[in-house]
Amino acid sequence: MQYISQLFSKTAGVAVTFGRDESQTDVTNFAQAKNLSLVNMQQEHAGAFAIVDNKQQQIYEHVDALITKTPGVFLTVKAADCLPILCYHPSGVIAVIHAGRAGTTKQITRRTLVALKEQFGISENLKIWFGPRICTECYQIDKKTNKHYDLVAENRKQVEAVFSDLQAEIVTSEYCTACDNDQWYSYRTEGKGVPMNWFGVGLFT
Image (cartoon, helix red, strand yellow):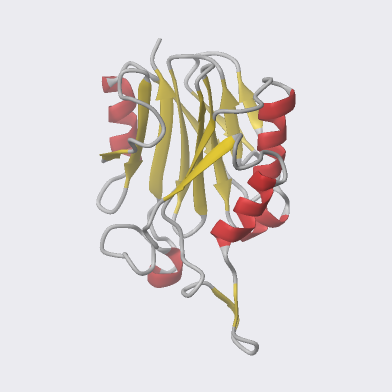
């Protein structure tokens, strides 16, 4: 488990990663140790998000992003090549996004950020973290044409469609799940049934 220091100070809350040799059990134990209610998603590469408005431990179905302004909640996202995104605003709003190629095509990041802007009144000072994901060089999607897909670039475009560079700061992890497979699980490298990397963010009460 590693802390993500770029989002906010540890006194405000926690933003963490769980990579290779860590599991959902470690995520659960971490949340309990921090007295945070664990909230997961049943991710399905969709374009839908949910707003978490209570401290109940739960799993949201049919969504790939979560938003909350409720302190004491630990939002999580899992991935093993897809792009995990964590968001934080000083007003006390946090979000997690699961952005695979299908979800990216369905504008999951843009939809979530529009909600932050329109439903939570966020217009500036938003911090966004792009986590470990498969890099463009490793993500070939068409062998015949040697076409590759850039998850970071495509999701950055969606951020920029909602917030300017002055309104939102994007911090991008240097890790590729395939290149750095000794630290992160990778579906493309390891195949079907590979465990997930977990990422979470929560604000203290």
